[in-house]
Amino acid sequence: MKGKTMDSFVQDRDALESWIQLSKKSQNALIVSSLGKIQIPSSLTIKALKKNKKEFTVRTQEEILARMNEIKDDDFFGFETGDLVDYLDFEHAQPFLQEDVVKKQWEDRDKFTPEERIKDYMNFAWEKANNKRGISASRSISHMRAWLWLAGNQELLDFSNEDDNYAPYGKPILSKICEYYGLTDQDNGDTSCS
Image 1 (tube, rainbow, N blue to C red):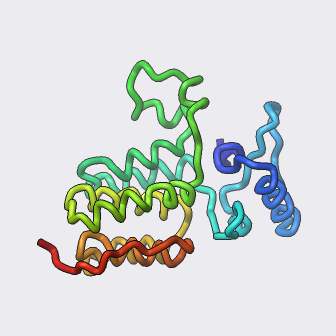
Image 2: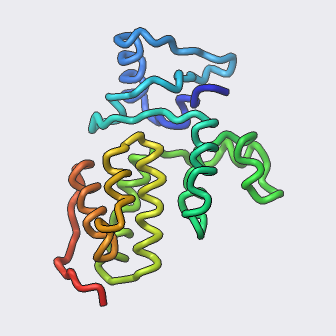
Image 3: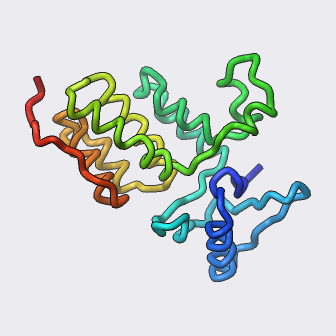
């Protein structure tokens, strides 16, 4: 499948209407499948996603698989890869899943936009960074990188990939993400790394 199904990203009627209106304005065709799911061309950039109107680029299955291959040597523990797998359909995800996972289980799991994941995870990320939990803080940044890439936010992704922006414990990266998404910066001000 070339496009990502709408129901993977949109969970309420207002957002769906925004997608439809945006599509009409940009003259991109929406394709309604026999199951009633709406597929979006991979090149469509959504500027009216949910309530905060942040930009969101739909990634294709092929783009996600290519990204997983691109980062495999740097993603030693597989944190980013695991997040990317969550945005694959069952057929593409199956090689990465446990053998006992069936298609219905995969399709029935809760689905969230990358932006929702970022917002939901941010408190936990700040807790680990402020408490100087090195491995957990690093893992938080790995998750953020995956979600930023999925959201098409190259500027923040590039910032998060710069080693000089990590110390202490990913706080500068978290602060920048909070600023962009309008979240509360929870930095406790401790800049020591010990």
